[in-house]
Image (cartoon, rainbow, N blue to C red; front, top):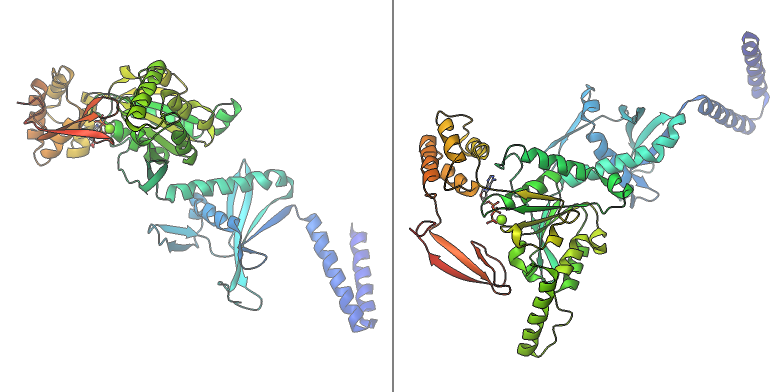
Length: 484
Ligand SMILES: Nc1ncnc2c1ncn2[C@@H]1O[C@H](COP(=O)(O)OP(=O)(O)OP(=O)(O)O)[C@@H](O)[C@H]1O
Ligand SMILES: [Mg+2]
C-alpha cells in the first residue's frame, strides 16, 4: 500500500513537472481532464447518490409540481424539524397557520421503510439575473440516499412524498356540499360543526363508526385485491330528531370528504341519476335523505307498476310519452351497486329513513348498505354527553334519579328535544334537569309552535317537519307537540 502511494506521488510529481513545459492551452486542457477524472473516481467510491428537484424545469414557465410537493411534505415532518435549532418560520395567508422549515443547505433527515434519506434546500442567484419571469433565484431540493437503496427510493419513496402531500392538501382545502339541480351539481362550502365528539350516541357507537370508517379509508389495497369496488354503504334509521343528519356531517368531517346530497325528487329519470353519479368525484359521501319519502321504493315490481301508472297518467295529461323518463328502484340499485357505481373510488353511500320497514330488502342487503345504524331516543349516556356539551356538566346529584327516569321513561325523548331543553336552560342546570325529569313522566314540554305537515305530491307519503322539493305544505298552528 505504502509503495503504491509513493509510486502515485512520484507519478504526480513527474506529471506536475511535465505540465510546466507544456504550452498554456494544452495545460488547461490537461487540467480539466484531470478534474473530471478525480470527480469520476470520487463518484465511484461514494456510496451515496443525489437527486435534484428543481423548482423550474427547462424554461421558466415549466413549474415542477414535485418541488412544491416536496416542500409541503417536508413541512409535515414535524419531529425531524423540531430536532433542529435553526429554523425558518412563515405564516400562511390562507389559514393563518405557522409553517416551519429548515434554512438553506441544512439537511433534514427522513426515513422510509427503514431506510434513511436526507433533504436539503438550496437557492442560488440565476445566471444573468432576473429575466422577467419572477424569482431571481434558482431553487431546488436535493435528495441524498444510499446508491444501494435506489430501487426502493425510486419511485416508491418519491410516490410516498406525492401521496402524503395530496392528503395534506386535501385536508387543508375547504370541503364542499353539493346538491343536485336537474342534472347537475351545485356546490357550496360545507362547514357543519357536527363531529363524533359532539354527537350524543349510545355507548361505543361513535368508536365503532370511527373504526369502520378508518378501515374503509385505508382499505384501497384490500378492496382492489379482492375485486371489490372501494365503497361503503350506511343506512341510518330512527325517529325524527335522533341525529341522522348530524351523523352524516360527523362522518364527512371524520373522513374529510365532500358531501353530495342527492335530492331524488329532482331527478327525472335513471339516465339523469347515472349522469349525476358520474359527475361525482372520489372521496365523496353520497347522501339520500328520507329515502322512503322521496320515491316509491316498496319493491321492484311495485316500482315498475308505479312507473307504468305514472307514465300513463303523464301521457294522458300531456300527450307526451313518458318512456325513458323514469326513475326506478332498479335505477337506484344500479346507482349504488352497478357498474357505474365503480367509476369513482372512495365513496360512501348514506341513506336515511324514519321507516326502515318500508324499504325494499334489495336496497338493504350487505354490499349496498353494509351497516344499518339505529339512532334512537335519548339514553342516559347520550343525555350525559348532551349535558356535558351544552352545560359543561360531567356529574350532578340528580344523575341517579335521571338515569332511572330516562331508562324507564314512558314518553321517550329524542336527542333533539333533549338538546332544546338543555340549551333553553343553559344558565340554570338544575331547572334543565327538573324539566328533563318532568318530560320523562309526561310528553316533552318543548315543542315547536308551528309544525309543518308535508305531503309528497308524487308519491303520496306524509312526513312531519320536512321541506322537500315537489311537496305541498300544510301549516297547522299546534300548541304543544300533542296538540294540547
Ligand atoms: N344524537 C344527537 N347528538 C347530538 N345532537 C343531536 C342528536 N340528535 C339530534 N341532535 C340535535 O337535534 C337537531 C336535529 O337533529 P338531526 O337533524 O340530525 O335529526 P334527524 O335524525 O336527521 O331528524 P329527521 O329524521 O327529522 O331528519 C340537530 O341540530 C342536533 O343539534
Ligand atoms: Mg335529518
